[in-house]
Length: 229
Image (tube, rainbow, N blue to C red; front, side, top):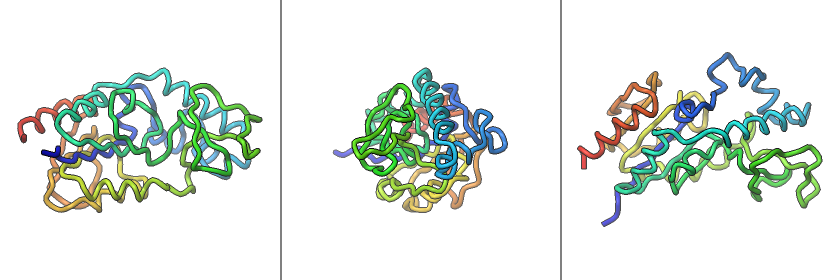
């Protein structure tokens, strides 16, 4: 008998409890940097060394962070569900917690690619230096989707979400598109849960609201799902 398909859409709120700050915490600044200076193609063209240094620092933050109880709880759900995580986060905390099916909408900071080819990816745990060139002769850059770039993983994410038997939304404000539009593809009538310190406005009805931080919320979710089985 196949396991029910549980789709989880996660945002920055799940990693915040691991110490990874979100840029939405402070008026368009991310760790004191203007977002568009460090997270847009224009910023890269203007000052690639600044952008590279910024993501090298973010990568160190990610490598020093540990998965929290929310990440670990979602990995445990694989015992009873066919869990697929769609995340807006560029960290690898879901994978390190043990989740085996994770789709990154906005890229992965632990991978790099050439400026010219976004399909061939290379693992990176240290720094990317200016002058580190790919085989095609172009500069290596982080495998991260910047503002103004296409979110190429959105179509695979839609293909996942339309098959959901259960849906969980954790730690996202639903402000960033196209990710925020994924909830529009859910089949009617399936169980739906939202976990957030501040529940975001969401279209549609029938959501079970858990207004708690991700770690406490996932603990409550695990109880609710075990009772529902």
